[in-house]
Image (cartoon, rainbow, N blue to C red; front, side, top):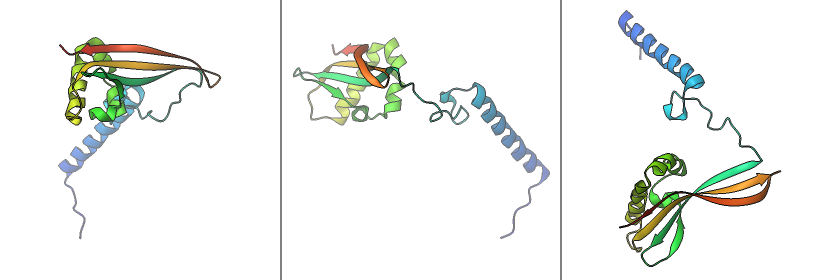
Length: 146
């Protein structure tokens, strides 16, 4: 099969599109945010956490109408962990947003009792010299069903 030869206009359009993509990649690498994917910086695995200091872990906690309190994994809400982490500021600014997490849990677990309380928590593990020296919890937001 013979290769198709592009006319001058098609070549210019392809060159322009490639140039724009290259410029966006360069700008995104130096001044972009992770949200600008695929033109943002590719630093997801290029950084490391300090071995000392606080380590935060996101936790969903729910109470059903029978009074049972339990922890819910983000996968039980139909979310990946990073998607849940990405909602923290939204939930902090509007705690009623937790209602949607409760509804998602109930949709995935229709045979379980309805939830009456939902809490989003950061568990904080304090490390010093790579050893656990303290634990704390920070409640980000709470929602109670009316």
